Image (cartoon, rainbow, N blue to C red; front, side):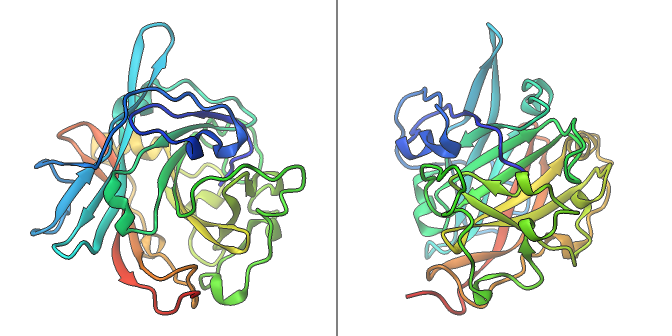
Length: 302
């Protein structure tokens, strides 16, 4: 997981001032204001019956002088009692193919709005970090997308030493087998372990983490901690995997990679995901990053 580059695009309805400070950059805010999510009949694959799915606006960006590219949109699925069932986002095929290549020294970052119904979940926004992977820094060395599901609203970064981002984390709040990427320089370049305003990435060297191997072409996961507390769930998906998924021949992902290890102590009460996946929606030509299997926090900070 790498977030050091300060280039951030945020287009679409209901873009917030908090989003504008994400990663300490000047965001581009366009579009009209929006209310709650729109409940649609076109549901993500695997949506359980008897639930309601709400979508945020489609976030898009102008590429060049005339190409308007749909990047993605966030969604929340709730049951009849407003318990979260799914939280996710769609990344449109046209974004995978038409977004400008990021610079070799860092990502371009695209904000994705969640619908108003996200108040029933721990999550407040989604940011998709797009990496060229052209430099051999760390092991994440191929073009890839990192969708981050943020818990706390983005804050102003804390340079130059990022003390808030690097605050020590109590052992009870760290999911089993995960460690700070700052402590595993052979896996992740320390310069890339800190996401300004989001936190430090925590990786799991115990799992078969495909994205920690050179030349990877599949998926992986991580967590972010800010001011000593869990602040985001991050996924990593190689462009090659997405292009192969469009053709129906993406490599199989071990089930254990798609399970979220849980901490003994959560930052606040609520429902948290225990599983995630990358699905295909051929109907609207998109890739779906979805978190599901939401269960109540076993123990939370008061």
